[in-house]
Length: 466
Ligand SMILES: Cc1ncc(COP(=O)(O)O)c(C=O)c1O
Image (cartoon, rainbow, N blue to C red; front, side):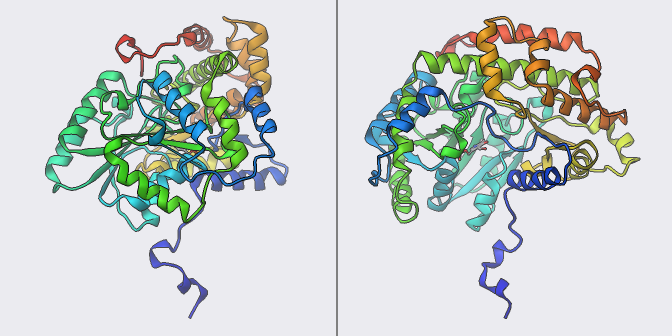
């Protein structure tokens, strides 16, 4: 007998999550003295807002176990937040708090018995979590020309072909890995299909607050009876390492909620008490947080536009991102030229990008795309977010232009420039002033940045959401 026999057969070969694996490989290369541009890990570049850090300090002595479903004051703050920010009405009783939304998703996978639908490209962990539970999710490929959005007709057709039974659809918008999102009318159409086929929707809205136009809309608005909203502190509050995630579960799914809570009680017990107390101030919001978010959105929006322009200049197809900090270019148009250098798929392209250009990023196959596709996810986070936020505050409203980005996000610009240059077989830039001039891109970045201060919530008053 080998020691491997002590592992469930279906878990043989299960590796580290793709994002963590690329981070580890980048660390190894950096230790060997290589200059690495880290566009692999999806971690917020911004610090946790000062008022939320202060709340954590004040609560450091909180040491008692808290209720498994979460601190009551936090559940109240989250319910208010969801109503205020997403127009999604949930009572505190419907909120579950956990150490990360990833953990909640896993609890859901443990508790849920039925068909799981995952549109691709999809966040790296939905599929593996199902696999750990011995389930086979249905992956629903989407297309770049549709903005990587799931077509309601495709979902409807699939449901009609399948036997009836419990179904769970995972939607994630703004999306990791594509940055694209769903317009309100598209969500309304998906809601109609979901209602017709009695599907549960897990709506992963962890990037909602980083919608560049502050105009995120939730499908819960159109399908309140069976939408579970998922969010947390990791992205908009820069607190991934604090581990705090939230699910809002509608009353019809109370049994699912209670089963998840029961599993939580037998596994992690509760979420860290000081973090929960600090999270109350984050979800209550206020002027400081609004200013923080406004600046974060303007920086990310301008940076994204500038990077999109660089990639488009290299002939990539890249769908305009609406929020978050990712781009998902497709280099299919360069396939022939790349093949002459033995770059036949996304994994090979990422290998060359890391080894030759020092740019860490992930192939589309990590997000459920076909291995042969030349898609790549770039995380535009390799910059000092604290410095950039301070500079944005100093500079005032209209200042997120090419010069600002060159001063505060140079490594991201150079890294994306290196991706573009490697694909075109050109010399790799080392500095921002070696990038091909793209005045239009930078001008458009600054005009986009001016749009980013809108605050609005009524889905009916929004037009530009994708
Ligand atoms: C789309 C998406 N959903 C969920 C998560 C999990 O976030 P957390 O467990 O930190 O709440 C992430 C983190 O990268 C993500 O990108």
